[in-house]
Image (tube, rainbow, N blue to C red; front, top):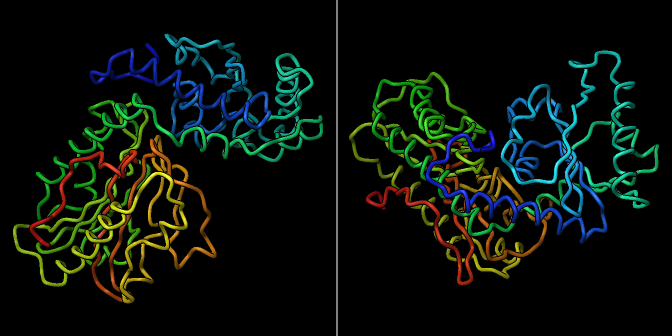
Length: 403
């Protein structure tokens, strides 16, 4: 069994085999489409997608110490971190394992450029062996020394991140099973937070309960610490702190949780601290956020363009526009993924077009908090787009008795 799948959680091996084959085929499809013989992957999430191997993912995201060449014919050459070849055990892949070479200042000091040359010579040699005269190479992430060496030696670099985001966009039925495993873990964490929530505890104490359930069930990490209470809920994007929760506070959070099998659960909810009833203002904020999420969910259809969605989306009342969430919706898979859908008000500066497709998993977002206000409501729902519209992937409830 791969070290990537340390906890099985009841998912059948046949599902894991299907998912691995599907994801590698999606990468190969993009390479063929762009007449590119190979892609060089450094992003640990992209490596996980293509090969289902992981190795100290958060650390590897900062330290480029493992990298993989995936060829259009399915062959893989993997440069693995020191003494970590075991993460490839049990995988049915056509892989050649080598030792990785890093030239970050931490690893190489003032020898960085020389080591990058040694690295580059090996990459060029492997490409010559397996790709013949085709000198195109997609790269998802590479620092200046590496890019300069490859270009100097006749390699034409393509945007590998675009290829990988496109490959990751459409989920297979097996992937949706794994997404479900992550979401069930997130729901356990949310339920635990709800049970433990009480006045007098800190935001950090409450947030720890989500981490506990994620790790307990084989999850991996949480990308942010977005949990805020009281006046820290406006504006949004405060990460959790030692603030003590007070009775009657709004409490809002965004899970951003990479759970079992490396898939992200991205759910936002807002609660009330203590057993009191919400104020009229709190109820109004909540009802507006709830309306925004569900109105926009009802719009989603395969074939709809991103621009059409932005133009038809729920209209944010004027007093809440300045503090609007950064996007209307975004793709989700192993982490936040393509696309990110800009608000109509932001379209000229931040928008780009495309089409929703069946099989895309998407998070529909809302934040409602008045400019200059003292509280706000954050809600987010994770869905999959089907032939007739979108379907929620989580049963995590809303505060419907506030409506």
